[in-house]
Image (cartoon, rainbow over all chains, first blue to last red):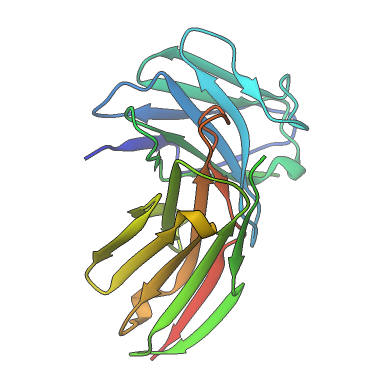
Length: 114
Length: 110
């Protein structure tokens, strides 16, 4: 079946540094991937749509200069949290679809900024 | 955009009990999915069910698209069923954006 893999599963970084999170589609090509963020005890909120070979589309209120998305190949999208601050600590999760409307999710990345 | 509402927000069950979780959505959809989020955060796909009824073991789901709701049934609950259950919906003209409800946190006690 479809598998979406994220790396790393968790990361701790110092305030002011940048962190890159990878999202890979392992057995299919994904022209579009989606990045979500989830704060504790809350639902998943869509951050941006990652499009292979073109610029990402960000949801209202998401800072594009802070959350850099690169979708350089049909199997890899990356999210870079730049100049991270403690308020960026969250659970980040990506998803992709094979071609139909059913979405499959990665295992998520727990980011802690200290 | 589409609004997705789930109820109840919390549910505590004794092991072996049955339960029904509800998901209401504000507009017609081409995708309705149910997920179980495990304690490590991973979203487990339970059902892709834009309409009709499906069953998988002790779980089943029904979506009545014309009335804009979906139900997830859990029978003979087990402690391993604990976690948060999300429904999420997608409209065809929303660029593939899956919108999540607020979730139902289920706790099954032994």
